[in-house]
Image 1 (cartoon, rainbow, N blue to C red):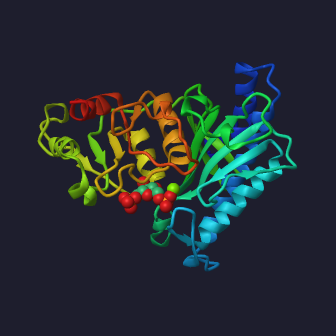
Image 2 (cartoon, rainbow, N blue to C red):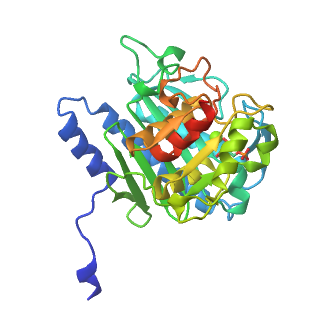
Length: 337
Ligand code: AHM
Ligand code: MG
């Protein structure tokens, strides 16, 4: 019967977090676990809001531009508010950087020891078309004796204690790392729980895919044009076929596919925009940590490790390439020449 086929011993995100803490840091205060719990509440709230968006007429311009000059959508504003309130309410977060806020936010009334950097709804230009968007986040522990300053976030990506994203697609998928591999969870909307569905995820390398906004190729360097053109020739590794092009234009969705199928994703700097488009703290760093923890690589346009960068400004951008080791190594033979 059907009931015999139902799995009844599910690993929820909450259970996973508690068990991971007991296994890896039995003496820890549990503060990070509580913070991860507040993050999961924000993801559920945003997932729920995006699902209802069309019905309650949230789609459309809000009539403002955000700190980086993009048109701000109603859902961007609401996603940002949900995130800010969840972090404030958790008590564990002292410093928050949001893509939608020009300055960092310090929660004076919170005594917590963590800083969170986030893009509440990345890829929001895709929302009207119903394309997947996501929340990207990175977490730092405050520096010793810090009461929460900008210095707590202007640090290398190596110092993050947790990072990940939630993609709001057909289901909501959370990919999380605390520096011990990557674990993937899927939101069961009826239970209201994220369920472990991709334990210890490792990047596959059996699909030959490149993912980049090729409309910018006129502005790319010769090295990048040569590299991308090389992928369009039949190659031995791919049974004498060229690579496939896949570009959604929503970083979370493009990275999600790269994690699950392999290949390479790039948003390089070009002659129009020297440092590309994507922001270091809440777009490049979290994705770079996930990729490395899944066995892949993430580098900038010089071929240097993304996680070794130290941003000087909270909204600083960087060119980024991420994917399997073999794809990034191929890229490096072009850009390191
Ligand atoms: P956003 O933070 O304003 O939503 O922009 C970031 C998004 C990424 O999700 C995506 O990778 C990129 O912009 C796509 O940019 P483009 O349209 O230039 O290809
Ligand atoms: Mg963004």
